[in-house]
Length: 256
Image 1 (tube, helix red, strand yellow):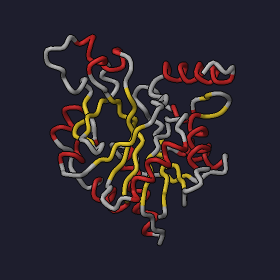
Image 2 (tube, helix red, strand yellow):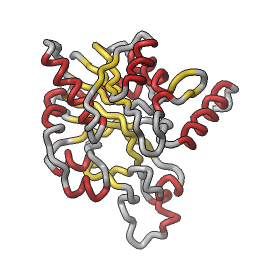
Image 3 (cartoon, rainbow, N blue to C red):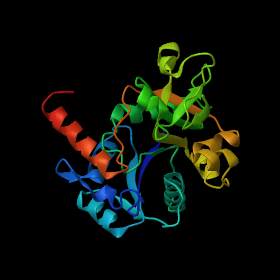
Image 4 (cartoon, rainbow, N blue to C red):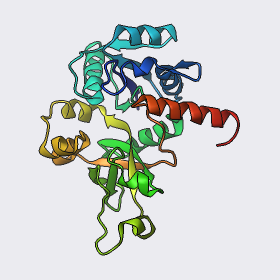
């Protein structure tokens, strides 16, 4: 099985412009992601997909591969679709595509391996990660996307609201009465599925919750959820970067 890893990295983030090039622990955020992903043993190829020459230059300076993509893409998934199409047009063929956002400096190789392993099942179209929620603040925050699954860990719905709603139970007791899961936004796609997904128009649920994975569910695609013990620290804001720096400091002093 040939696996392609694509790292979408956009410069013009609304909340944190230039975040892939933000310094973290002595190197760029995008360098952390590239070094983890590119050294994955099962990988056939890795490439950073960006709309900005500064990011591409930083990646190639690391010895990495970068591709300049259309600046009009609405999501990292669309950017991945462009890269896959261009590589296939050049004669390259892949079975599975990993989508690892360029603002995930602490992504772990075991997370990527678990996603890739899902495609040993020929029925798997899309795979992504989830982790157990332990704190009420995490459960109630609309910045954390929650997911509910069927008995085979296939996603039924994603929401910014706590789901499921426990009728007749005080909200402060929900975590004691039910196991809630947070979505960790690292994806893997069967290559043929990815090419179909990027052609779908936005859907009503997607627009309502601002979650593109709801478009896929609304159109009948199956999303396999994989358990991970780590929620990771994505860099969406300058405050997240401070949290990541503190995480590194604690890790280096063996506090975590």
